[in-house]
Amino acid sequence: MANAASHISRPSVGGQAEAVRAALRSAAIAAEDVDAINAHGTGTQANDATKTAVIRAIFGARTDRIAISATKAIHG
Image 1 (spheres, rainbow, N blue to C red):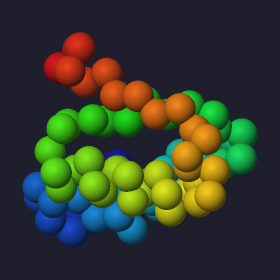
Image 2 (image 1 turned 60 degrees about the vertical axis):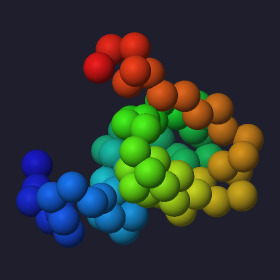
Image 3 (image 1 turned 120 degrees about the vertical axis):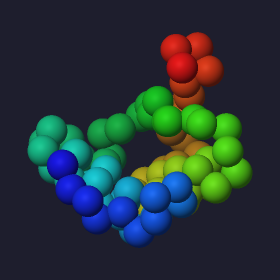
């Protein structure tokens, strides 16, 4: 766990992208092998825009071919 947040309530694309890259490395999964994502999905303009930018930064041109869902509304 780290405390490298750039703002308490406004997420950073760079920080989140690095967290995703670290998770992929830790799991020994290549970005090319991901075909579905369950995003956080808070439904806020800032967070949803950031998540979209992070996903595009990690997966690039493949982003539009990856299934993306968000189940937060179901489980809170």
